[in-house]
Length: 73
Image (cartoon, rainbow, N blue to C red):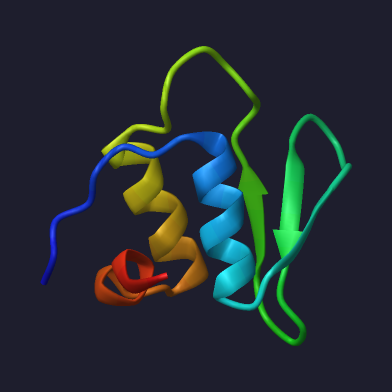
């Protein structure tokens, strides 16, 4: 299994779109992305740094996205 690396918010959104998610949409305190018949994933608020490996791993677990699929996207 390939290791995760921190990624920018822009790259995070791009990869989710490649994996079939639409958005980001406004809702509540965070934006979210959705997949037809699937999960709704929160999109971290923009900030000055990259999305950490810990946060990325938690989001991928919620979305049931394999690390290898994420790295290939």
